[in-house]
Image 1 (cartoon, one colour):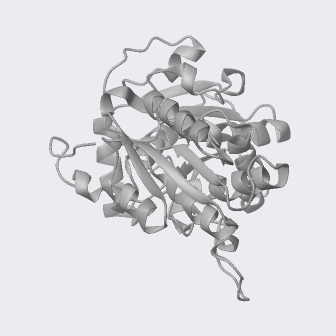
Image 2 (image 1 turned 180 degrees about the horizontal axis):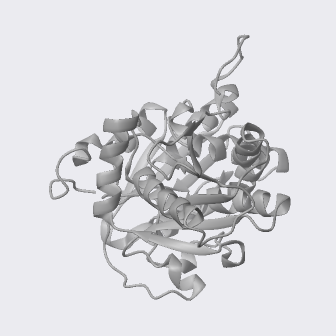
Amino acid sequence: MTSHEQPVDSVLETIGRTPLVALQDGPPDVDCYAKLETFNPGASIKDRIGRYMLERMLERGDVSAGGTVIEPTAGNTGIGLAIAAEQLGLEAIFVVPERFSVEKQQLMAALGAEIINTPTDAGMGGAIDRAHELAAELDDAVVPQQFSNPLNAEAHYETTAPEIYEALDGEVGAVVVGCGTAGTLMGIARYALERDPETHVVAVEPEGSIYGEALGDDREEGEYKTEGIGTHDLATNELFDPDLVDAVHAISDRDAHEELKRLAREEGHLVASSAGAASVATKRVAREISAGDLEVPYDSVVTVFPDSSERYLSKGIYRSFEEWEG
């Protein structure tokens, strides 16, 4: 857990060591767990890559102290990078598509970052292009580029995955992880498969996303409300390696929304739609194991709850499905 018996010198030292908590709604003969990343100082899993990526990039000389970090982001990565940038002596600029959470953009600005919005219809691809344009205009500027930087997945290989395995004494049967940049999924999957190649690895995406096409699944592309786990363009998600994934589960917005509300009401988890989708998929995998339809090395399933519902209150996340803006 995130607990310290002695004082620490920086908020960066509080990143990681988040709780792994049993979920209560799965089949009784299969243990389900969720890693609660809201316990990080910036309240999301992206704090991990913020610290890890910038520390490694400074060590390698990709950017120097006093330089500028420019990142296309929907918000949580910006918050994580902003926390790390200030502590490591870097300036931060974030390029954010207009439709994303107002709360996240306010928090990035509060942490000292400059926010530049790009048109919603240009998507994340437009934000990526604009970030690189800005970096070319400035001296000593770098784009960490979470969508393609191997340090993203490496951060989870080095921190998130070992924490899970330590907590469960290595007895992990399946991992079920939302697939946005794919960094979290790929880092945990690689660590898991090195320890037991029979570990079942599942990516989670919203219905309307097309990650499943990478595994040969049919997908009908469309809009979705669930933020942070999904893509309309596989070319922008360079970290995703289908060879490390056994299945991609597409979860409807409605199911994710119902589950995030249930998680709050019944289990005390104030989590967002990506966690709702991950929980639905986790229980689905657990039921397959319980029914004998899926063989795994251990009767346990682990997922990740990436962030808090408080980031999405302005979008009506706890209202009716129809009122939820997504």
